[in-house]
Amino acid sequence: ALQLRMQASGLGHIPYEAFLMLPFIFTIVAMAVMSRNAVAPSALLKPFRREER
Image 1: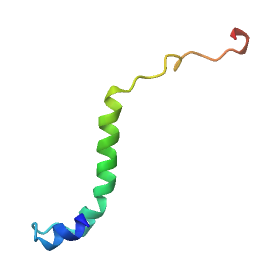
Image 2: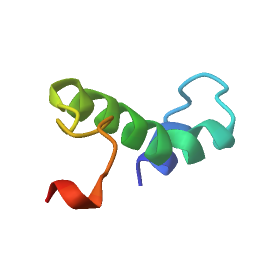
Image 3: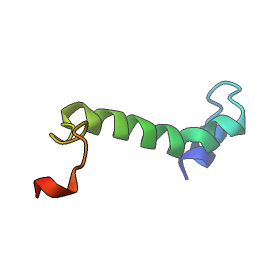
Image 4: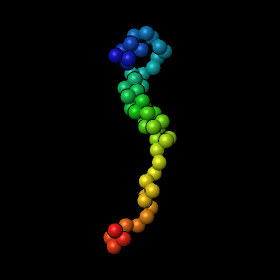
């Protein structure tokens, strides 16, 4: 709906492919914003040794 509305309003000469990319761009931006507060697991680089259970 946004794509059609923006194209109909004559917002410059933006190719329709740019509008097709919008969901992907929004997803990447949302993931980047949410990952700012993410913390890596504490055991990320510790080797797994079965006998240390």
